[in-house]
Length: 432
Image 1 (cartoon, rainbow, N blue to C red):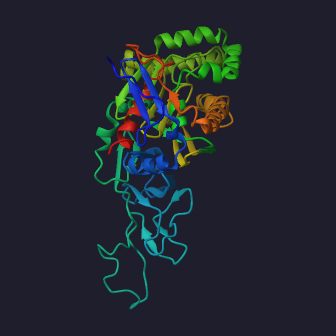
Image 2: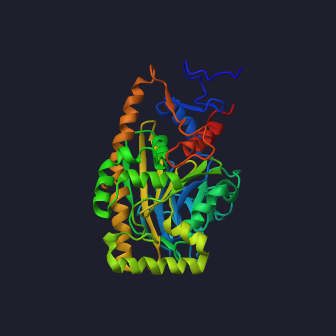
Image 3: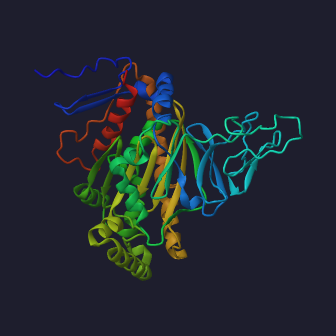
């Protein structure tokens, strides 16, 4: 007799329950509300996993820099005068003030405004002090007066990641099969890809894992985003039911290992990289045909078809999201508290893209996924509603993430991709 899952109440230190025989997967709502869980996540996940820092296109020239907050740490991401990429903690070794206070720029060095300590852009101490103020050999190796480096900085296909754990496995091993997604989005153009200037920053009053789930949840789309689909099909014809049935029938769920996962299918909207819609007119049709032809010649017909016509939503454990749908969005999400998230989103596009094609892309980016678009306000409302609902966790303690668990091939409106995330989360969080 198979022992059934105990759902009477969550067990301390155990938040995920999986019953493979019955096809049940449950997550304790305490995982979304507990301060202790939040602190444990910082220790076991955000201080141990590889976290996205930025893309090389954001630092186009030597001496370029940008400042970014990653998991609560203020950082400098820069290229020094030799063109080498670096990641430093944005704190002066003297008294702790931030040494770079601009969001971005081009600088040969950094100077702390508090007491004037200076540093070359390779992080080396470069302050000149009157004789006798400090020892003559002050600033030599081991004196801790250089900018402190983030323990690990590595890249794959120009996507730079950091790790606060010096002993972590390599980025290549960590990304495992998810490198496929970075390959696909990097191969959209023969001239390379770039992060479009500008960032969308906003907050949500919900737990960060709710947004992780939502980022590749195909199940909610038709219900939550009904307004968008009504608008879309008024413009392109057809019905949401037909489109969703087609997408579900063609969809795939990919478990890339280490908690990374994605869903992929064919959606009804236009894709600037290769799927025309009537609203773009005959000129748009010609533009798309030329893009597809170039793709087929460069990467082969099968991969060209996947790049041009496939829509994919991917999560890189723990908190990097790449939505390659009607436009490409790079999104990071960090917990501020158990019930608040900070979100940053960037548009990703081919370098040298003609203005009319870039306009279509950015219109798509803003129209659906932007914080003022059709989708994101709907999602925010749903996530914040769930967070409020967790106030009843004493009496309704479990989330159900079982959809499609007994299927041999889960579809995009099933929840296997979320289970991939939760298994890795549990592995890290529930270990003794």
